[in-house]
Length: 263
Image 1 (cartoon, one colour):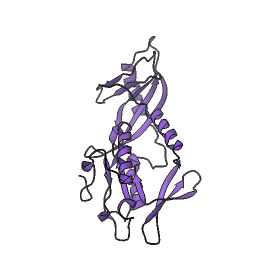
Image 2: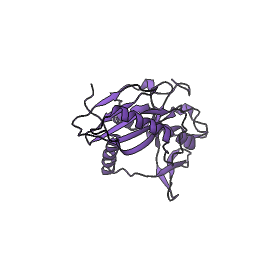
Image 3: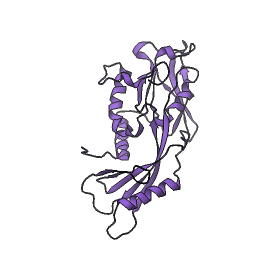
């Protein structure tokens, strides 16, 4: 039974305000460039670059968390190529969406899941008077570079508009008002579950080392498919426990790697 709908944009703005208030410094727009090591060859920091000014910043770190969604493999390869003998098997499933102005007052949240013309549309009404429409995916669409904004495509958007017109009735037959159009890439895995784990030290190359025990480590949290927003807070709690060496709230042993391949 659905009791509420979470607006991803408002949710992310809420979290951003909270982490800033807690003293977290946000580097945006930025791209990870390389790792830094101390005089003993152990991981000591990550160098990032502001993609607008090209200014580089070194962030001290003995632990690194990879949580870049569909771009996690690219970030991993940039930072850890030749350092870890392991693959990060996460792909990107492109999907378009529309946000529409509700043709009448929204008094409660509703969701619709259906099948139309080989597509599986999803429609959600929101208390702020908007309706979210999605469900037209483009499996073959290449994931853009991390610093680039995904460019929408006319054909899937027109298909979504047609679906919306067929499912949403306006009072006088007028066309629906579009608030915004979007394209996102959901981080998907072959096995259908995310990777939430610490990369084991035995997978490290011989010329790479980490701080021992709880002082160091490389962690991954990605591959949630279309459920990233829903699972974000729980994932964040467990990952925070992992990084701080605390007992985990849930068993995530099935969400790791096995011999450098899929579990």
